[in-house]
Length: 244
Picture 1: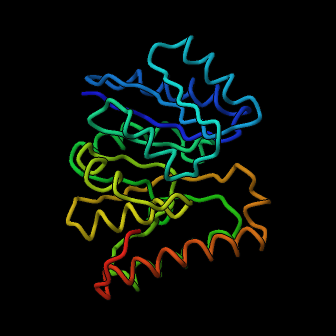
Picture 2: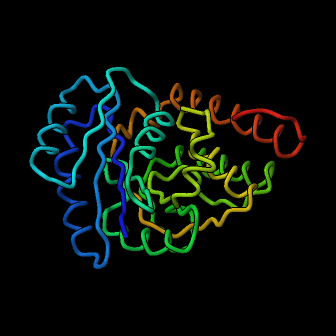
């Protein structure tokens, strides 16, 4: 079986090489799979593209996809998924807030489900992040459960696995490109009757922790994610034909 791991990378020059080395080390341990690592480098201007090119030359299992302009999370992941060769496609945030030691679990669960996500908010999970960010995140996921009727504890964790058919049927049809992309894919998956599974992971927030906790950033996130919940509510609860 082939597994494709996508590493979405925007200005990750400090992390990308060590992350590739870490995930290669972990994936090598897993028997009976072949794998590829796709660096979906999204319009970086800090030298991430040069490092990614060197990694592609150094390791035969590493591929580098470059964009001259910033595509946004949704488009960058969608393009990478379309070019991935694996029966299962996963993605992992480059800062390794979730460690690569969870990759075997992700792959095992993805063999039995259409969409699998790590979750920071299950009983067994341990989370290190600013309290305000955690409060906003938990409130957001409560809204998904309350307004959309989807049993999701954590929609936004940057560690997910997708079956090939969910890529074809759902991911390719989603238009959302912001950080709310994950929410749209999960809700569309659940509402369309595909198999969805969460599992506990430990999370340590690393990247731009101070910036991510600023009121300006939080207000922007609330506006973006609130708009997406409204559109999904109109589509799935009110029966209005709307593309999300």
